[in-house]
Length: 286
Image (cartoon, rainbow, N blue to C red; front, side):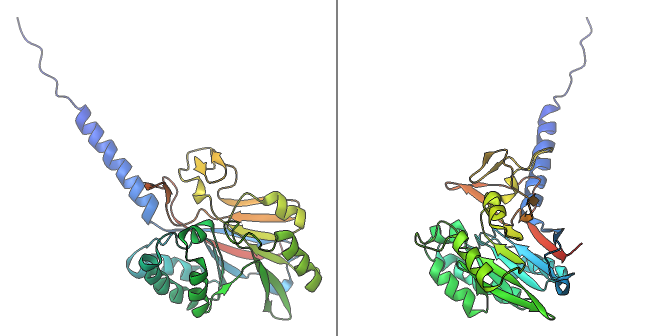
């Protein structure tokens, strides 16, 4: 009786290939910085700000992209921004470990354009938020803590405002109070609001804020087809506000997918199909 030829088992090789493909996807999704472009504005924007450019960074979590963050700095420089906006979670660990990283990154950013910053939840959780604010101001960063400034171009100006994260001081000014003060001091002016969290579109629309830049959601962490991501802080599974522009009334909210990773306790959670993002914004009246 003739024997049937022995078939080699192929599944170990198939499994190895699948593991390698997944590893490449994870490495790429957590190290390759991409730039995504958006347009904000509307008829309330002063004509002088047509074409005004903003580089928006969020949720860095003290991550490094290349030696001396050269890949991140290069991506920001290529935006050719008039200003840079950082919407929280710049750091998330011990000061002794992350302060050198801050002192290396921030001067490189301020050398490109003026930097405006608001806190996220992780700065406060890390325990050295006030010291971080002082370091940022040392390098010329405008730290907005429930306050606002004006930015002029030509013969007109816009208002740039920023709110501390709710993880901050309990007695901080409310968004309602800050917007009321803006309307009192600068009636009718275009308001660009910086805020870390991405779940307050209803509030900003009710207050009549023109544009809001935020982050917090990490793009939903895992961006599966036909979803806005798998999970996000404060939104749970299959979140709604994770990336891009959301509009309500006359308010536009732009959510950055962020740059750094996330953690569940001490377990790092990788970004999948969700590359670290530099947001390039062009203001336009059109």
